[in-house]
Image (cartoon, rainbow, N blue to C red; front, side, top):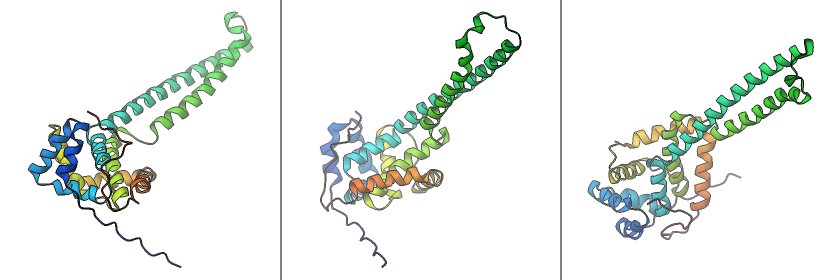
Length: 240
């Protein structure tokens, strides 16, 4: 028997000014963000996303993470560390091969007392074994992401959370909120719904499992909220 589609979520009426005023002590940029929304006439974008189920403080935190460079810088550090480890692994493997050559020469023509020690003959094997472990660690640290993925990842993370908690990606509203965030932070960066959608879809195409996981987590966390306004989640702390 075919399951019937779930009914679309109904929107809760909220007041952006009232909510943002109650949260402005959480981070210094929130008041400027509210002013930017008002001056651009886009307070409805905030009210729509929160009204459909995304908690206000979680939304602000996600904006800060996605637009403030936190996601990009954190992943860039991981990628840089991963690349340094990979470089070390290559050097270790080269060293192991050189030691193996010496070991073979010692078998044919002994004479180097310091290298004729029994412990020396296990060094190449140990290096190779440790190199494989480090190589796996480096892969897990970086995953299959690249530096070019970072801007797409930050935006896709925000969109996935919005889509999971509200039922729709709300590209237009997300673009309005990102524009207001950049203005509040004094950043000159044009944002359009089309650019947000394209970057999200590129990331989703390349990293479908990651996007789906983020969306599903948001859906399980927020998607079944009752039709009542929940001011914010206690699990999120905004940066000052």
